[in-house]
Amino acid sequence: MSPASGAGSSQRFTFTFSGVSNVASVNLLFNSGLTGAGACYFPYEVGSNTIDLLDDSGYVLDRVPAGSSATLANSQCSIPASSVTATTTGNSVTLAVTVAFTPAFAGPKTIWATWYGSGQQQADWQPIGSWTVE
Image (cartoon, rainbow, N blue to C red):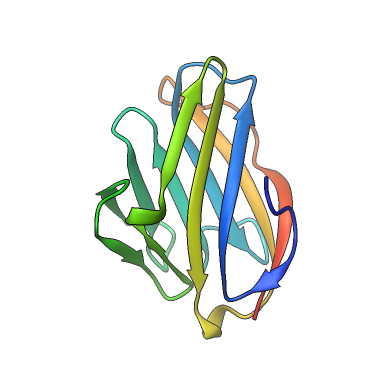
């Protein structure tokens, strides 16, 4: 992940999932704890090239094509779909996305990641970085 830590109200992040195969989605979550409620939680769907953002409850999602003019938003963050790029090469998926955080989401956050394949979670959620929302 790059950057692996830092601070700010907006940042372009790059996430690389290596040693993976048959990937359906890669999932990223920014929050003070490992919960989708009150989080900036966004899956990227590899096959359909779409980016999702879960709502404030952590359950209902909006989905738009990566690269489109739409912007996804909840009370924690917004993601312009035009900023989303992804590449899949062999056993690796790299996702780059710009995330703008809301002032109400201020404070230190852990960045968590996992991935899904064949309809099942393939790895436990792992903390991969930290970000202080300003």
